[in-house]
Image (cartoon, rainbow, N blue to C red; front, side, top):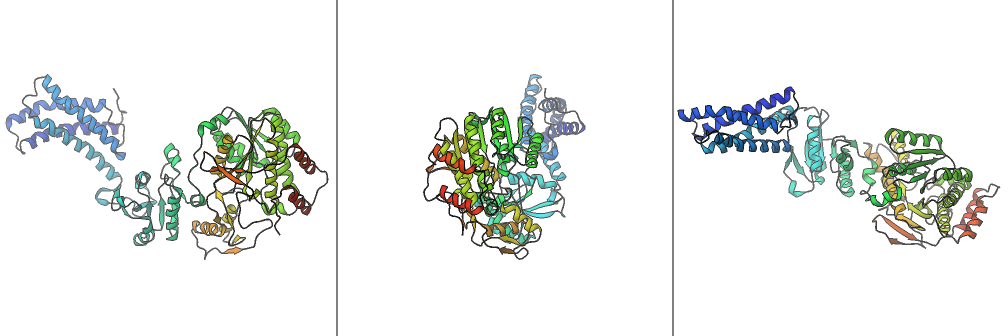
Length: 612
């Protein structure tokens, strides 16, 4: 027998339902005889009443109706009531017939009583919930709560409205949805007032200053449109958590957060080949260089999902390595990690690390990436770190039997106008040159800017807005490609699995974004206007282009089985002779100046055209 928990609430509910079964039986007789029960049938009612009460007592207790709380009564509770009353409706006449007491009971009573009992049991629960939520007769529990509009009228919105029913902070006054079939309907007592386009007019009419986007499963473009309409109407916009977090149960749908730039510039989720990535990473030793950087750390997080045998975190910056180590110790205790401080330019340190841990897969994310910083006084350091570091790590990978080596490249390697881009293009050529040898398979992945990465424009804009401005943009027409850190890392893993050696994967970056529009969006999301925070144009910095490219004039792409990945077809370097000459240049003892480095780069990277 599935007995409910023995507590006072369960006993009260149990007693209520047994009393309702008795009253339903009596009322069924009363209705059957048009409110005037003959004396003979009144005696039959009284005589059979103990049997009716006994049957329902046993059925209700046995079916465990009292696990749920009345305050949260819902459709599953109604289903349980229907089953219990249905069983009782069959058991009562069966018992009375067995005892030869059922002949004199009017048959219509057997039909009327269960209907009345379902209404009494379910109605009591719903009335109790309405009373607890102060919804009886339309009474609002917390009238002082902030009125808010909800955009989206699906299952997530319904769950959100239920969660916010007892909120002292938010009071939902209306829903908006573009589906005309939903227009004029209600969800949890809240009316669907119109389409998204009506956000401004509806907010003004109802005195609303906040909006919640409740469409976690919708496409990015639809969510972005909803955010744009709300911000254009001057509303402060919040959103529910990501769909995956809600489904997993990690976060409630009412765990609201402010809309971030990722919500405006982000894209639809990446579909990963989990089976293929498990084959690449599960049970293997995986090494990530630059593990403390934005991309490197996110790669580590994504790799951990596939349960590697050991994750080797290779990083030069002590604090960055410490930070990612503490993150893993706190949240990913099941994944063994090795934290190695080292410089990819150090052949001895790289050699010792690969000899000790014998990784099967290496993701090389260590690089100097700040364009203006690498143009003046640091050109040779950029070449040393980005090219020599790649060469030494790649040769060590070959020597120690690494199965796959994945180089994180950049769109700045395409027709580069700066040292950083030229050095990354040279790194690609190094991997292409080494691919001529059997063994390690080299895969290169090229993508654009990553939202919120260290040293990127977004943290800079955020700091400038916090200080009250101005926000500095180099040029009114400058554009860049953007993707989220999570998407970039996932696509790097996908490309790493798909690559067979010698490919340059180009990530589908969507449409380029004007940086000045980005600045305006960030100002607006902070709750301010461009009249509050000024935007100043400072002029292009050394080595900076107005726009980035994903392919050079000499490259073509071919499609892959993944919609967000293409392969660039480009000629590599000419093998060991070319590599040996490059290595001699990189290992020279004298320290060349910036102009000399740039001149040498133009000879080794034909596409490189130094700015100015």
